[in-house]
Image (tube, rainbow, N blue to C red):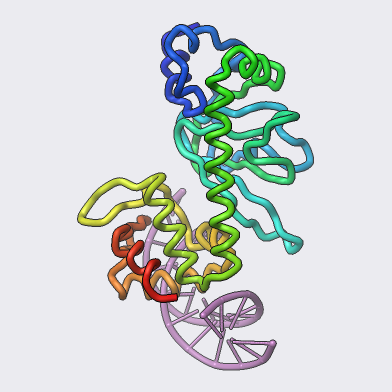
Length: 230
DNA sequence: TCATTAAATTTCT
DNA sequence: AGAAATTTAATGA
């Protein structure tokens, strides 16, 4: 195994508990490939036969509703894994996985994943952790979508994005993913226009700064705003 | 409060 | 220039 591939594997969160020797033993990792923005890697018609390891890039997991409009379930960044096998689902069937920008990733076929899990229980443990976190996030999302207005839904997802993709800058946390208002709408189950208006309002409130293709949020302020006020 | 429709305007490629 | 994205406004549920 090349040193480069080893380094790459060490940055995949699923393998965080493996030491160098264990990493070197990982077998069946396909070649790294660069895929352009907008590539659909997984679609409902042909469920993933593989576990995808995302070295660098951004991947959106989403479903389509009956009217064909997307609902984004998760955004994945560097080091994340997604895909499915018979017993494991990280982003399941009926779900699309699409790159939001040029991404570097590779695939592991199902038998290799299952063998890896048998040989390295730590990986299974880590997988449970990842799945648990994803369940928690989705539960929170369900509750938010069911009970809260767009302003609060948007605040929550921005705080969440700041946690995952935020970089400090100018007193605020800049979200290092280029997201259109339409992208955001598909995350909070709203519309482009309402997101535009709501972002403008949050801007007036001093909680977000928008401009030049970027989004920044006052994360502490936003958390405070989410806590008080029913 | 917010989706929808329509239209104007700005920003990207 | 042309496409994509953003913004504003009116209307109704």
